[in-house]
Length: 576
Ligand code: GLC
Ligand code: CA
Image 1: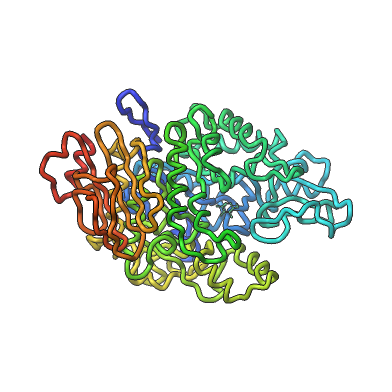
Image 2: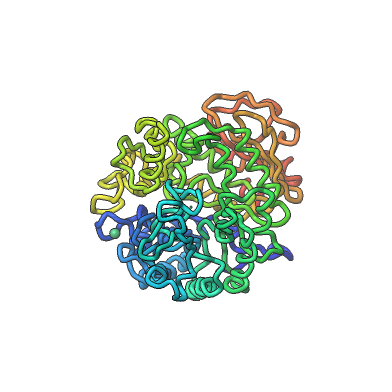
């Protein structure tokens, strides 16, 4: 597969700075054989949709062999495909067929933990003196099996320690008990992981998305888990042993990264990762006490401040990922927009607001057509182990099923995991058999066929934005400045490169807003993209419609020319 890095003047731009990513959650994307579970042949059958969208690479959530306790984030064989998803041949075909369409395949790498069904763990349990025993983290049951080694809790609820009578020890797991943590202190384990990564890279994949990578450098004894003392040593070693010299993308998931620590992972001289997924802007909208299980309105100034801080922190060295959605988060139009009256408009507003920032955007399956939260009403509809784990905990703390269900309806991970809505037909065109999780009832109106056929469809805005990133240096490299960060409704920023400036305004509220713009934002230009009607300028006072968003391109050369109503003209100006 060739993924040429284009030259912009003297500076080489890596291909992933021009590309937009697309995340596929394989279980829910497309089911080719009617067993109710999405699969790799299903993904291959939909590659034309992704090519049409214009994306540069897929991030594929895990398809490895797995007991599926956490839908594949519990891997029992890193070098094989889960039978329900297909075969290694199918996966090789996916790599090839995607490459034929100019699309790279980025695999999910889950190496903070594996499955308790992995051969390493089975051996480790069977013998305390075998090599694999030390691949895991153990604690003696000195005071008996009922006295936990420490009070560290698992992310899915309950203690992070499980006692195994056959071993006479506890093992450590930050997630489910079926996901034992790997002991990165062991050099033989690390060598096995690097060998496995190279085996995948040699197959022609475009890189890795690294699951909870901020946890691998932990010191459990000292209680330092996220961003532990060994993290960057391990990431540098991993880089030198695997991706060094290869033209691939690496993106590490880090729930704890801050603008201060972000550059350590992806700064240009660090030899660690291309970029990280950080979650400051997501956590900024959670309840300080109850986290995501209690619904609170988005605090827009806080949200914007986090986005701005990250743009500034990585301005000169490092690179941002840009996203509001993934398989662990609610649907973005439901969380930050309006999934009712203004669904179409607010979905486009969010796309414009995120895609014109500096970084690599990631689109989560269905986002491009404005898919909404699942709207589940009963506990039985949920499939995610986190829901069961957290419910038990909430009830213990005195909450009620009703209160918990309301939180889950807003923020549970299953909101993003309902089947992809391809058509208005049976099972939303996902597959012939009853899907593993309920289809959203609104598929009769929200689906790829309907959105694509509608000239006003959301997907067309996505295509426009994805194309701009490929062709425009100011979209890719322009310096970001946020304005009116304290404004409670409007998000506004500029991007500047040479004599070009892009000014973006987005009304993130359902109100019509009389927006007073600071001078740096104001000016005549050419309409670049919009979600209502194109506008040529940002004036000192502009009345913004509910959820209206638009961008204006100002160019020293072009600004005096008569302005065209058509975004295509501005697109040409961008390329000039
Ligand atoms: C990451 C994944 C999530 C998974 C967890 C444990 O956060 O995105 O889906 O449950 O890691 O692997
Ligand atoms: Ca299937």
